[in-house]
Image (cartoon, rainbow, N blue to C red; front, top):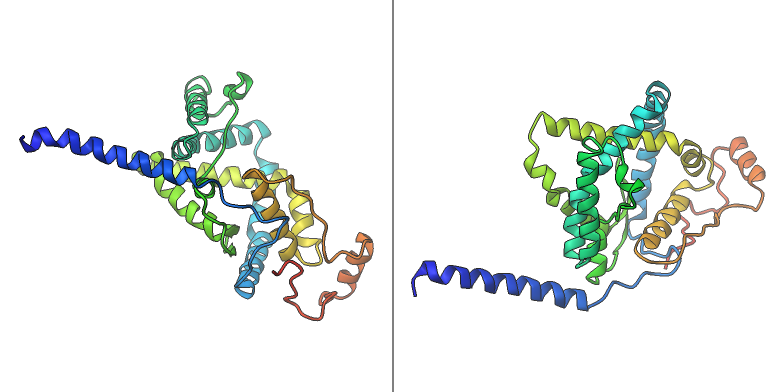
Length: 279
């Protein structure tokens, strides 16, 4: 048999091996989700430093820029840009749906991308949702979860914010796997990045009150943001709905706020790194 005749057989064997590997990994089942917001925070000092950097960046740049963007750009335009940015994520969702063996979700996200890209004029509008084709958002972090990989340690990245070891890996892989990254070249790729940034600013503007409450009105914004992030992420992965009570609150928000205002160094605990969630 010639090499040319052997080639198709080899390709089929490789495809079968990949399929078998995917099925064996899927058979392991999803990783166990820890209860509540418990997690190992092994590098808390570095994480708190990154959190403080992010607070300074938000206070000096992101918050004011988001306010200027929200106040200066009409809502319809902002919505269109956010729709466009969201539509760009659909190919990545489809890739992860396939890796998760959720072929129904892959078909739905593919159909959604087709509808919004054509009828929705490149994704500026969202007729797919009105037609009953909602987004089934996912990412490679969820793919790893489905294959049984635990979330690892809690991590705070400068600019990017809260994450876990697993989701950090997922974020890098998602960036590499997104098909649009390989087909869209400069300067168009720069425009795509700009729309994603604008969508982020719009979210910061839309949820301004909630974000400010967490970041600037909490006795310990680091602990509160960690709790909220972990509970919300685990809910996305199939865990229970997020519920949160500030472990540092006295039960009287006005009293807590007054104490902090009177003494910026106020800390209800003698240890500045006291962690009520440490395992």
